[in-house]
Length: 268
Image 1 (cartoon, rainbow, N blue to C red):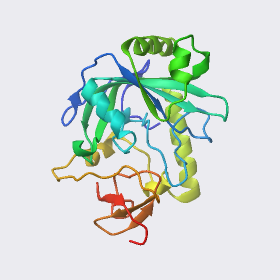
Image 2 (cartoon, helix red, strand yellow):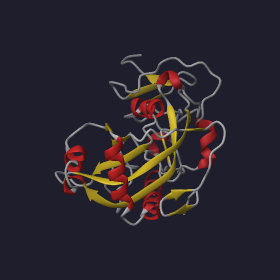
Image 3 (cartoon, one colour):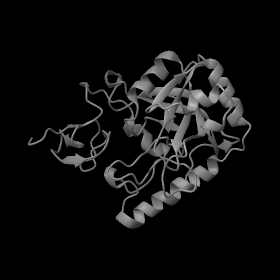
Image 4 (cartoon, rainbow, N blue to C red):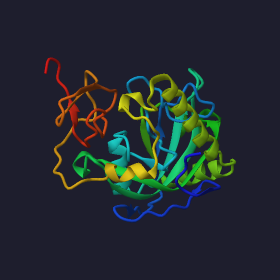
């Protein structure tokens, strides 16, 4: 099983040096909604999402926003506010409601390939704990209302809510190993069908810490880049290739250069 940190009871033992910086914990946190994989037995991210293969939550490295451009505003506020705990929610079945699948306690951060000007901070957990999913509406009040009231992709929560949710999650057996195994199984399925684990990325393999250095900030000067494209098309300024993707990618799938994609206008 691909795994780059020592795991016991949900704790990530890997300690990070430069360019990572420690994140002070002010007690607050976020609820973060993600798309889950319909082919999976455990609610891992939607690896096979058409034209928008998901890399976060990246449980195999315990990171968020290192490989993807997801939720830059949340990542920015986590760094600025010390809101160090992210609880992950997803919907597994239509009309069932959201479930809580686990959490990260973020211990480190660094600037990503798009730089701070684009609020691109990569986050790394010093602890992660994934569990048998808990239906948010089954939680005691006021947690049920906080977690099950509809919000789009993320929601800040106060220190009391963070502490209570962590206690509830920590009372459940850690299933992170099962989640990791499911990530590998779905990647293998995608690769058998298309030749790529992540077709919209042009990526044959999964993710590991060996991939991390090329996703760190470079010395290049960055301009502001929109995180979405109305026509889902992106042009690489290095090779001119136009790709179709539901989200901005950090690496061009063709020339493999970093931070080169920007929205492609119709007819351009």
